Image (cartoon, rainbow, N blue to C red; front, side, top):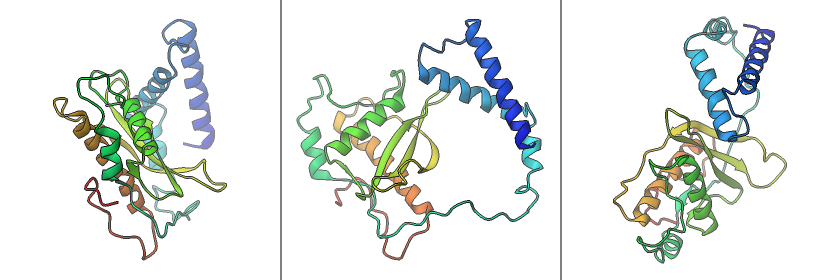
Length: 224
């Protein structure tokens, strides 16, 4: 499959999607998230069924044939601080919240329309309150990854400063494991934030780094 083949396939796909919208099968104005989920689901199904010759194209590529290719770019990290929960800040943030009151925090729920959006808000709140901490030059963001079939998210790391803040690194899509709804809001929040820290630290572990990066912490034990 050549670059032109991929371009032609994408052109056909976009044209068909616009036709579906025109005929009322897809409501583009309803919700941008629904449109993205629709695109992701359709492309995933086409790849699985080899529609458009995706699998054949993959087998015929230079990489599949074993031709060595140099990397486009390489990331290196050094002297980093792992992501963790600050126990004191976490307690100061969570303790005033009474379980029977309207929660001031976002907790993902199986009944939520977009659970990963709730997780993203929870992480932002935790960072704003100093409960989730990491290396100051890095910014941790959780992006939504829900669709009609599954619930998940993307933990992405960006540069907080400098000119290279648009490109991010991630381990990819992570399935969202729901906390016990019978647990207290504090325990649920801790479980979700602990998991996000573990995923973010795993991303850091994938990147080559210098000798000064310490061993990953047991996240959530107040090590910071």
